[in-house]
Image 1 (cartoon, rainbow, N blue to C red):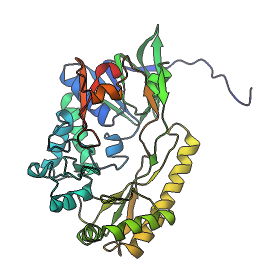
Image 2 (image 1 turned 45 degrees about the horizontal axis):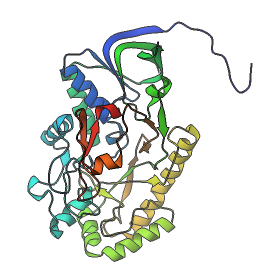
Image 3 (image 1 turned 30 degrees about the horizontal axis):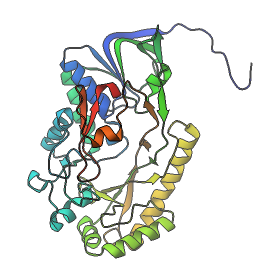
Length: 372
């Protein structure tokens, strides 16, 4: 046997299900894809490696649904995302600026809503960016899947695509039940890392953007902390620089600097905790980042307790069970959206998604189906 590789013996794999649409990954994209397909009358299976849906918004503790609105005060993202927000509203599990202040640059409005990330960092205008409770989002998402008639297969990891004559016909998955196959007429890759399309041999590009391990702190006097940040911006920026030098989690220095964000719950904040770049496909690097970022969380907590008003009694609530990545593999689709097309506001006949730009004055981003 070669020390660097092995030849696995041929085996027979049981077919767990045959379905019309198979969605792999239960993050925001997979959740929406599965619900939408089922509502159109398709038989849908959803495979998810964890025991819940929501992806980075739940397991990653990235609690802000960023830029559902733009800096001009218009709502851009609606559909199933808004349905989820509406359900969370009924459950008392979401917070967001009221519609009458969307687009506002009034200092009082900005200072109030910047602390949930609902203010453009350059425009300094309030925008519609809800902050959610991750546990309730898990429940709301599961209810919507059940109501739509989606068959959920949790605690299952899709490990390879089943391809015949260039067509994906399903996936092989690993689980506590064992190695299984699910066959499908259409397979939708919502893994976030393109695990299915890469396994199927599709062309893709690589990215290595920041990796992050979000953590939450409790016992915070949030009103006192926010008042200090709002009233002493230069002193706060200096603190952020000192925190970075001390090995804590950093943030960009500027008038809207944020190293913590308010949550739906009193006394609890969440902190982005990232490294500038990382390989989300390398298990050794992922392991190293997990360990380092947890240590960083403790350094940050100690610094906050000693230096940031309102954090004197703070404590670590949790670190995210899922390490966050902003990209890894990116599919080379039938069309690649260019900056010239975006800035020129080119119209496409097959637009399937709209996104707010990061900077005020830039046009909305329209994404054609062919990009996917």
